[in-house]
Length: 399
Image 1 (cartoon, rainbow, N blue to C red):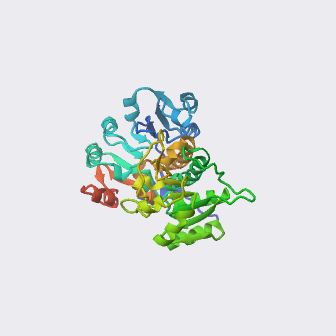
Image 2: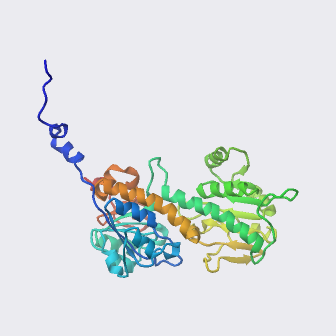
Image 3: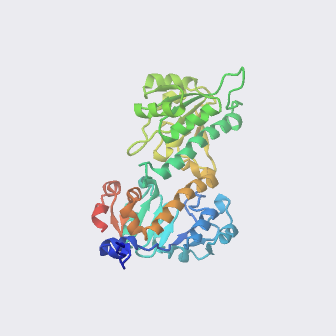
C-alpha cells in the first residue's frame, strides 16, 4: 500500500506559537560608533575587518570620522570595509544601536534617541546617579560589556582585557628596569651566569596569572601571593609547574618585597582593591625596584600609590619607581581594539540573528547578565544598591 503524502509541510502542521518562533526574521542592525571623548581612550569597538563582516550580513555601520585613528585604523579603511563615515556627531548618535568603549558622557547621553540600545563599558564606581537618571528618562536599554558572560560562564571582555594588562605590566616593568628615570640597567630575562630578575605578583586572578606566565617566559623568578587558595591552585595547574605561592601573610610578603626587583599589584575587591603593601614595606624595598599597580583602577593595593597618566606614567617615592596608570590596555590600543572587536562582532551577529536585542537577551543568558537598564528600568542589583535607585529583575520585564 502506498504511503499517504500530506499536502502540508512540517512547518504548516506546527502550532502557531512554534511556527512564529521558527519564522523569526533576522534583524538588520544600524550601528553608530562615535569618537571616544574620555581622556586617553584611544580604542574603538570594531576593526575594519569586523565592519566588513557585519556589512556583508546586511548591517549598516555609521562611524564618526577619526574614530579609529587612536588605534591606527584610518577612515579610508573603514569606508572600504563598507562603513558610512560622517563628521556629524548627532547622526552617529541617532542610530538605534550605539556601540562604544567608554561609557557615554552626559553630553553624549543627551544625543541618544529614546528607546536606543547602548553597549559600552559601565565602570560602575566612576558613574553617578545623574548618569542613570538621564538614561532612564530616554528609556534606554543599556548593556555593560564587562558584565557579559560567555557560554562557559566567564566574563569574556574582562578576560581579554585582563590578559592584555597582565602582559603589559611585565613589558612595562622590563622597559623601566632598563630605561626608566631610576633605571638599574637590568635585562628582564635569564642570562647564563647572571641571577634572574626577581618578580612578586600580588593576585592570582586573570591579570596575575597572565603576568606570572609572561614573567616566567622571560626567565624571571616569580613569587605569587593571593588569599584565594583555589586561585593559587588553578595557577599552578595552568602553568604546569610549581612556583613559590603564598597567602598574603605580612611577614612572608615583606620578606619577598625586600629582595624583589619588580612587584605587580593585581588584586581586586568588592568595592576597592585591598591595600596589602604598607608604606614601611615600600621604604624597605631595594633602590631602583619597580612597582606596577594594575589595581589602581580600583584604588590600588600599595599605600604609596597615586594615579598617574599615560603622558606622565611614573613617579618616584622612597627610591622606588611607581607606575600607576589606570586603564592599562588603552596603552596598547590596536591590540586591545582587535581583541574587543573579535568579541563584539560575534555578539552583534547573534543579536541580529535572534531578531534584535529583545529576543537575544531572552535566549542568551550570558548576554542578559550585561543588561543594567531595560527600557529605562534599572535591572542590575549592584547599580540599584550602589546609587540607591529603584530596580527590577530583568526576567520580570521581558516577555
